[in-house]
Image (cartoon, rainbow, N blue to C red; front, side, top):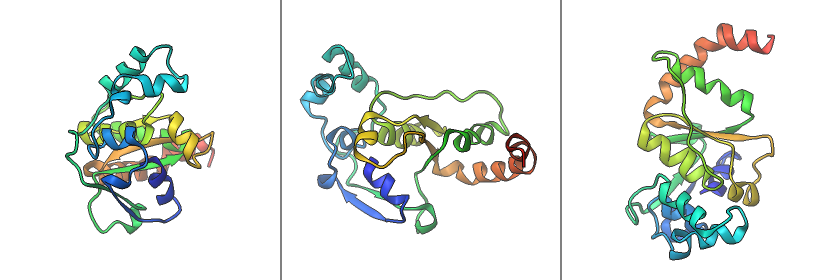
Length: 188
């Protein structure tokens, strides 16, 4: 999933059936595949060296947001301007300062704070896709081991997932914010 998100940044549109997802961790969280035993037990992630014990890694998997196993058939990923459908989620990859402005756009009407949920793994599949779809809230991720290892995401980039149903409001709020706060903060 992370590779397809990064390919969409270059203009590609992809329909990826369940059996073509290369990452079983992402594929299982997205409801495309069953979660392999070595992933559920924590063995897979602890062998990478990111957790002290398999139990610690298993806790990450146990607590992750996920879709029901084998409930999905494919993922469709494309640049927003090429989407001929209403997206469930829009994932942005950019510099932290740029993505920061999603926070005031999200809180523009209702106020409050934005709470993010992330882990050392699953930045695009769980953090930026599933959580926004399930909660209806934006969610930020600093990236993860997998996407940093297998994609061209920059060391200085991060991600945000915006639920499709609130995208129009986010854009409207960004336009209002640009008129004064964004220009002022950027010295424009």
